[in-house]
Length: 365
Image (cartoon, rainbow, N blue to C red; front, side):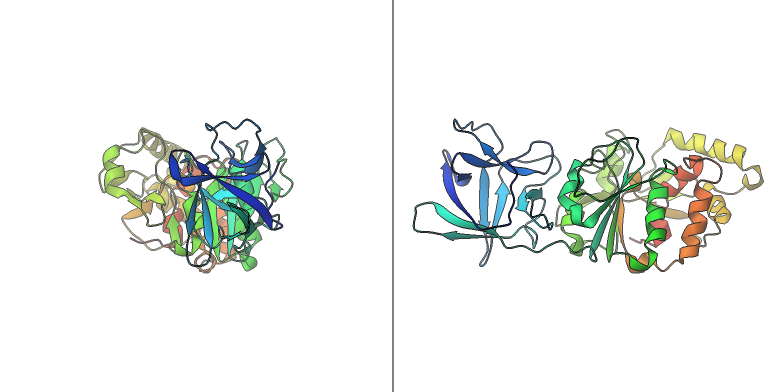
């Protein structure tokens, strides 16, 4: 049964044998349990209890609130129980924060407590999570329903009724999705906008930390960490990778204007060499120009001249609305037009744009 925090509940905290810091949260025969794949939390009816399930919880208290943390570690780093959407559906989040606060007040019966949500509700004016989907699962986005929009370019429908989605023609990859959102909402953008692919976790398993600690992120926050287990090199990850105090990992490398990684240590991406040949073939009148300078010239997008530019993998980043609005809406219209001018999926332009977001918005070390 779904866990809904829309009323005060009376729960029993059962100690876990061998773990004095852990409890089971129980109503009758129903144990509060976390899904092993999604962020969902629900009541599990289990008359003969199986200790192997992920339903051991750790209570962390400050002077006013209780924070309820799943004892088991999870790949996407979500552990703290929260209910910040208007639906009051329970989900797991990465942080002990204003969206994961609870009241636990003892009553006269031993180990029994009044249990109620004491956290804030998501504010769509504060944050928007822009999700570029083709056919990936967006189950994780359900935990952020009130502040998310999924741009769906795949043939299948999104069946989660509380999750806002926009059906789109499948063009331009995620760059087209991001630019479409900026143009369509230019005058009403949220203060913080997270731009992400629908399945960001292979590129950064810690990305949800940025959403859950949005007020602690930088105005321009890189969210890419790696492309795959072999790209980039371990040496580059060790030198350029960073971990914030709130758990977010990210990596920023230097690339030249032909998209080759040149620092802090060079990394040879063989695919980039093919991009250079494609650039010369498709745009012979710009063959002497770098791919970046040629693309920006075609899009009439003016940026400061520099030999190298910052780059974060996989088109994952967060930026504030005031930084987006430093460029005019007409500038973004020209950029999206150039993106799909030659190829409906963006082609070479799409790969160039994916590497330019930090440069476009002016990120600096």
